[in-house]
Length: 96
Image (cartoon, rainbow, N blue to C red; front, side, top):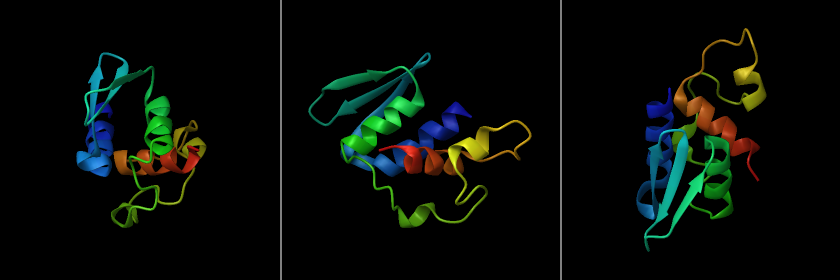
């Protein structure tokens, strides 16, 4: 799931920044070369929102499995599987 979430975050950020994963750490690199290392994807999403590097109202993000569900709903035991786009949508909605 991590590669799919990484791809979705990269799609949303576009050329505004670069996102990589090194082990369990998520690295956000600005266009000027400044790097921020985040311990988990939730911290990375918080930094993306705080830095206004991602549009939380992405018109291409609508629809699909998990649309409109909260992160808590998606990760609770017994919840139906969610795709990467649904997870990213929920994390962005929870951030900020």
